[in-house]
Image 1 (cartoon, rainbow, N blue to C red):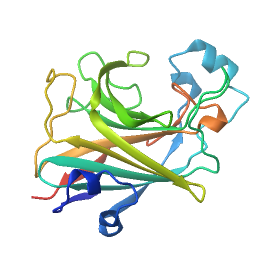
Image 2: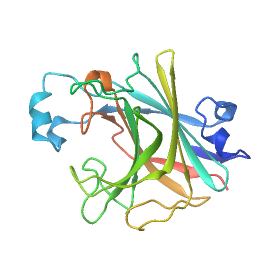
Image 3: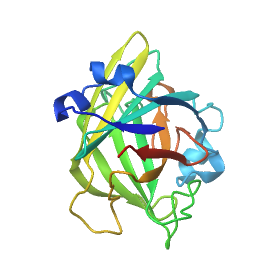
Image 4: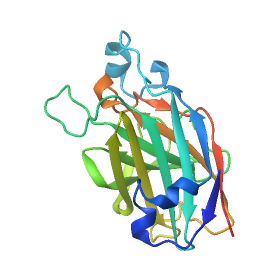
Length: 217
């Protein structure tokens, strides 16, 4: 995917239905269910065996930047909008971007002690910001901040359209956040949770490999 450089303000970049996205390069990324054997929760691994997870099979990905901020636009099919938690067995829809913080960071295990990954995690019940997380292996995810990544989403006609928007560079520990420069090629992975299918935590659809995203000079 090429993240084209455009003359657009934060409002346009951050609007999932803005006209700027109609001309952005895009790619369809196949998703697969996270194997139950890799669930960090033994309870989920045992109790969810009868329910097929990973219902979302594909996500459409686009990216743009304006020289100071980058935005990722994700679009996927979901027949029902789940954006509230009404009971213990109700879960919101969600999506995430993952980035290796060290070359060779393993995606399947959410990083390792020596090679962590960063994750931008959005949930439909927290619509305005994604959480910036860091992980060093299954079950090790922790929140770095909840303010630097702005998000906006719209759902209509059975499809979610979601934008993550963040400054290219942010303050924070170098080992816990990804710093981005114009001309860089990022390695990115994608995950989607369909809340109506009981997906939460490690139960999700995800891309099985890293995908390159290059910021146009």
